Length: 168
Image (cartoon, rainbow, N blue to C red; front, side):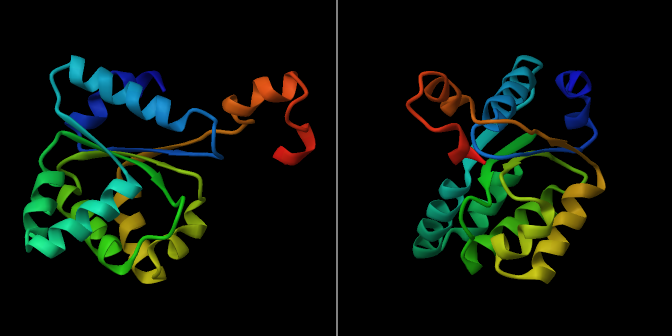
């Protein structure tokens, strides 16, 4: 984790992937990494997976899809939050592949996901596409597997509002 905060991974075109269940702090860490990068003079762009889908649809309607791919390829680090919370449609999956391919060994990415890599075929709707994406993402990457209970539900459990056995 400390190595990531040096931001050398950005200069080296490497990726950071944060995996774990909802509520364990993946987004918080991704934003912290991005803020540290910005303080060191790097550029960053934060998108949720939902933003990806919405922006792809808009760009398709306007005929500006390539411009969108170029915009997402430009920042020193691209953060994509919540990959896997719902499956990508075919358009978004293909655009995501284009962005990953264009950024490969050039621009860093930080991704958060609640899905293991074995489940990414379902996320992208295509095992071959998921394998190609993972091949590029993981070649120069560190994966952080975060375990634990949701921070959001922890206080409710302590107060007896949320039964502890429902979180398992």
